[in-house]
Amino acid sequence: MFYAVIPWIENKDYYFYLVKISWPAIIGLFIIYMFIFLRFLHNFRYYREGKSDKNRFGLLGLRLVISIMVIAIYQDMFAKSYPDWLEQPGISYGVVYSLETYHNSRSYDYIISIRDGDNKLSFKVDKIIFDELQLEDEIQIEYLPIKKDVFRCTILT
Image (spheres, rainbow, N blue to C red):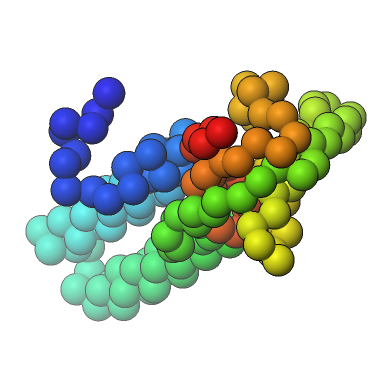
């Protein structure tokens, strides 16, 4: 896919998965950045060319402060909705000891639980991974460390 294009990024699958689940928010963030930047650039040119009173640079400064606040708020919302962007992917080895399906009003959630020595961990997987796994399979998984979503699963036995 794009692996040859970005050879210097480690954990490519991790970041491709994050883009896959958060692309609407990324596009929204980009649109807000572009809108505010272009609006600020337009207003700066307008004031610089002298089409307005020279003392209106205070208004330009106020607009800049408000724009920075809007960007900071949206950036904070993005970071709270997708905190895994700021983390490294989790990797775990273990034996599957539980396969569970939960049905909510809109969809099914597939949960696997693995045992790694004394540690017991639960993760959310998609249907394809869930259907391939059986109890007592030894697996290696890579997952989002905060949301506990598995993006890669390798069956070792």
